[in-house]
Length: 532
Image (cartoon, rainbow, N blue to C red; front, side, top):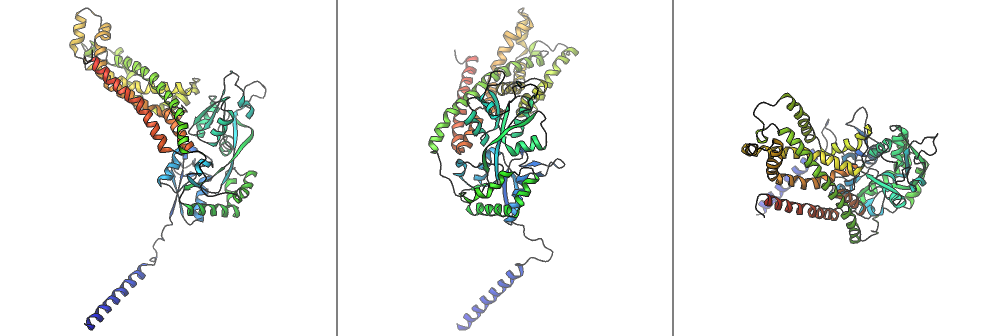
């Protein structure tokens, strides 16, 4: 028995020795092998925001540059990590952070107590100021009506109407202008800063209030907009910070240490000077850091109260959504019916088809066919941009709401044209022949006999399009129409209650679309003789 135990013990020792030798043999990197890659630091940003934050190189659009790109690289290098850029929309970046898809949100995010109550904020890496930008004033005409100072925002324009001021929605500029000038100005909220500058340059907006780095980069450095200039002195200082998840204290501490090291070595100043955004205000960074609280802030408003305060705004925005749908859909149906009649006029169902269509008939049909295929083949968002941004270059200026109505009507008219074309062609040829044999003119027969029957057939498809149009009004938010989805986005960013706000908005969309579905079913049964 003792001999067996000794043999077992020797076997165990031998196995342990082999395991140790195996681990030792594989614990070093073989000669010529690549060293292990450093862990990634996934940082979120939005290229749509443009310079000087994040933008594409002119000579290589696939490569991004910007002061925040270089800042993220420098921070990651100090932490011995590899910076990895993750494209996010600016509005949803903090939600992406909460999901865990990124480690840090670093894209011109201003410090607010509301955000800092849900996410850990780093030390400020830049002290920004708000600038006022307006059309270049005519020095020979003191009464040209251009905005020359902040005080001009308190006065109506030359036409007696409130001045239209563009801001980035849910930004510090949005809050500043709304709080100070909201009663005297019409605040127009956009999701991108560059399109606002285009609007001011083109005369659709009287002015814009934006962070000075943006104005310096596009207006003064690149000189991309020849008709606008920065006026008056900057106002309302604030701080850009990086946000991390509330339970990631170690990461925010590492970011803070990196920022302090970059500032001490002079790299931070050199970086900002390369992009022309260093100024005397940045000398105050160390003073701000000395009193900065890196912990979570206390919520200033009860979440329930914040949610209740948003309900009237959501209902008001739902009214805009309803108005967009109720005005644009009848226009779409009218245009669609006309296009369908032109394209099917020579079909047997409408009394044609006895001989091949003439050259004139084909030429008349061609523009409508091109119209339908072109509109169906391009996105609604693109059509909105054409109406709102490109038409003004031809001297046709339409405000946000009516631009949305026009784009929705044009877009859906192409689909209605196809629906009604199929509905007209589905009517048996005997219907038009019977009407013509009774002495009706072809036009009268189509209007009184064929078209009503086609309407009965297309009601389900048209009603479905109407419901879809209610939801597609959300696309109008890209041209600053404050409909339901736009108000949801702004309210969610203001309160941080993304899920709760989404639930409220969804309920409102359902309340708008479901009764329409019931009405469509009732109308369909009535027209088919099911209800008398």
